[in-house]
Length: 340
Image (cartoon, rainbow, N blue to C red; front, side, top):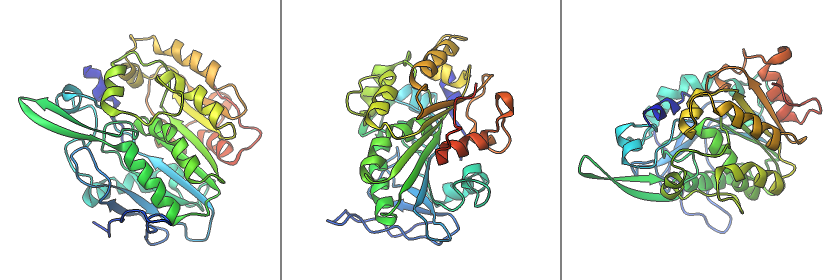
């Protein structure tokens, strides 16, 4: 359990809160083009019950492209993981503009958010901070007891994500190509929120990039996690291992790309695998869930965790650059294939 603390990943003011949606949806978000603005929303919650929010960087020119990145940062589901081990970021602290400003240099340096040299350069951009400990997919408010004191935790990342999708739709109703991605916990969230985004923009392409988010069988406290978070699972899904087969069937035109190291030590601990045993599970996952034209993997040797922070510098077997592979995923290039 102590190793769960390793699951933390680095990512990387106020505005008028959104009001309840009317018949035409909530009001559009307003932010200056070409720069990042954090927009807290009063009808969303972080783990401590304070408002959650999202950041927006509108494109300088008109576009029908939208990229949404879900931040990573661990996970927790009981008093021990949330308050003793502290294996999820910001469970008992607010996420506000000061927190956003502390992350802003990393966000501005993030490869897919660059305004030149990527398929996303001209897109509207959104960043979803992580503060709920539930891989951006929970719908529950739980009472835990720690050191004899009651602790309320809002595992409402899924509820928040539905609100954010609605707000983004009001802001960009004509989006035709939507990329949702995330690292670690954010990669799980981006994947699990595919049905939300696909149903919010039924006429758009929606594609998913999973950075170090492995839907292998969960060997550690799976029942406790699901009970604490009350996840928004896709139809027909009862376990983590069911996710990829279900999404591939329900969203056959969605491209799903996975970035992974072949022996990711952080996910090995998080998923409860004995040391050195996750590699075989990854091999099985890749062979079964990423062998279709719409699903491929960029896999590197090693036990490191997350890749997108090195978007511009990583290269795989055969010298294939991560940035080129992601561009092929983003554009639907026929050359896109598994690299391992």
